[in-house]
Image 1 (cartoon, rainbow, N blue to C red):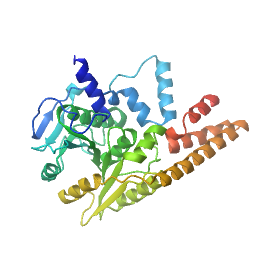
Image 2: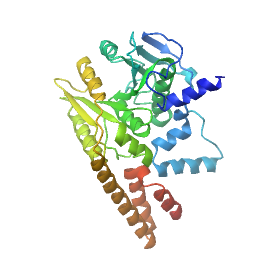
Image 3: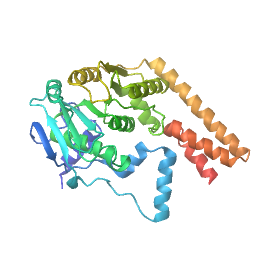
Image 4: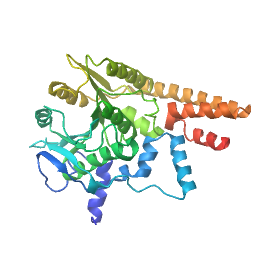
Length: 346
């Protein structure tokens, strides 16, 4: 068992509350490492926390009801780290403020890094980590999301990390999961590299998280979209996602269309541009952000009022249907009122 001081530091590092370059453990290896085994668990990857942050309020309430009926409880962690393997690339020299970190969610099952990325990571001073068996066929809530969280957490225990340069990213289907993780964990990740895969913020999933998390996402998350110019489907998805971000008061975004590329991982040159863009965080104008948030709150209040009106009129089926749509679109921003309304419909 770890003594109290390292435990306290690990907890603070897990939510990026310690200063840059402080989140370091004993010296560890550099270069490309395969078949890496991690051992440290984070409170952020606990099953209860994953459900709270990454499911909509009504979906989380349904999980709680199902467990209560069955007499079972959530496992503390859904991942057995002893059985998992990761790929890790660590540049030879840490920048003065500590390494950057990219927790990468792949669409494939193997723990591998896209070709040609090593020199870019070296120059940028960014550690790359990715899990095996976390591709598109893996369970999202039980594997892909917690594996990314645990990968980031364990690297932060081993190496000096600049907490302002902790990113989550992915390619294709993995990129779409990376956006969900960024939305639910803006206290850990400060940027997302969305490579040929994205969704509107209210696609359900993803679903807007609790108000305090959404506000932090709006204020501190930098989103960088990187997609090939011939990848028409994912360019269209990027456009929908970017439009949604503006609607949801998320203004710190950038898009890079890679000339000549199709649906493929970012080229080394595109990756280098993405890292540069990730560091160009631009704070939203306070007045603009406040007005946007006020407009959002009015939309949510209006939809919840419609649900209540249906309930008052005895139209419970219609009320339940509309409430489900409100939960999908507005998520944590509609809670706890949405949860209370659902209880009244039971």
